[in-house]
Amino acid sequence: MDAAFTAEQDEMRRTLREILGKRCGPDEVKAAVRTAAGHDRELWQQLAQRLGLPGLAIAEEYGGVGCTPADLALACEETGRALAPSPLLATAALCVPLITALGTDAQRSALLPPLAAGGLTAALAVPGPALATALALTGDNAAGQWSGGGRAGGVQARADADGGGWRLYGEVAQVLDGHSASLLLVAAHTGGFARSRTLLFLVRADAPGLVRSRQATLDETRPQARIQLRDVPAELLGDEGADEGAGEGADVLQALAATGRTASTVLAAEAVGAAGQALARTVEYVNQREQFGRAIGSFQAVKHRLADLYVQVQAARSAAYYAAWDPDQGGLALAQALEALRMTAGEAIQLHGGIGFTWEHDAHLYFKRAAADELLFGPVHRLRAHAADGAGLFTPLASLPRKVAV
Image 1 (cartoon, one colour):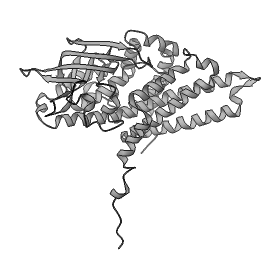
Image 2 (tube, rainbow, N blue to C red):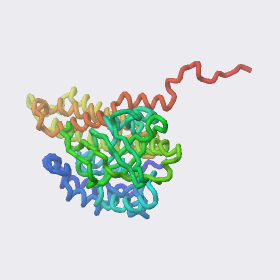
Image 3 (cartoon, rainbow, N blue to C red):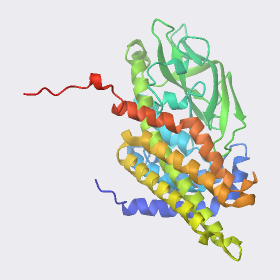
Image 4 (cartoon, one colour):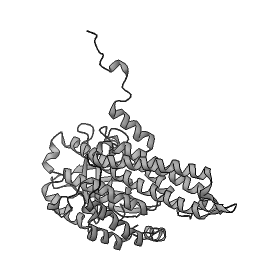
């Protein structure tokens, strides 16, 4: 394993940091999230056309850059530093891998090029507050209850009588960038109890019967929408004929779990970027704020608190970089990064003193991101528990093979 970054990766990070430094200050971020789109459309086009961010992990044959998910993670570390609101996570980390894994040749050829160019954005709609479960981050997603499980709730899909397509009916409460995405990937349950399975469907933003409304959220840099589907026409993601096979639902669940591993790596890098910037801003403040005739950063107690945060952020960064090389470790890296961000954001508010406790202070942007990410993709203890179960750390001793003395 070569842990060093390439010259191309270093240049991408430098260029991205320069662009975001000019266009994504705290005031610009607050202004962008209050627009109808929830992000700066002009900045998004600049990132897509100049750096090709949405196409980093898309193959060159589909108009992408052809890089690995590790490059996407490095880019998201920089967007995390600036808390830049953009469709990058929803489009490139959640939807692109699913379209690549499950889509037909025609679907990939039609969707991936505009996604890579930034002209088309996508959002993954998973029923209920179950995004972490659907992506197999906090537990096994094979049970399928998160998608409706044949009961009332979730999103239900039925094939048209003439076999010409599908119809969706139901509601999804938390869809990242769902209010502005041009394309929705909707996880829906079909087959009832006899052939219960979860499938993914493509729904266009202008589909009849689709109602989208932006929701008020704790973290405005992560805009969410409520999606209502009222007998909405949809296209199955994948081969229509494959739905007759019993393995199609299993393929969807496996693809969601694989996407979860990649997304957890990207999210970990993003959280590390945010934690590192929150720490840097706090260090800068304590070196300027004076008390008793000296900077408060010179007090030993403050130094110890900052040193502990530095160690925690660096450990989380190492875990995120390792997960970029080995995505199977993404869940643990995400737990480490979310915990580091929560601790750093909380200490940032404390060390800023009275001004830090005001809701309008910039430190609260990081605190809100930490809280919202843990609600969406955690919590931390469940991420760690699922990783421990997968590694067999708590296997009962009675079930372990015993050595036989010779």
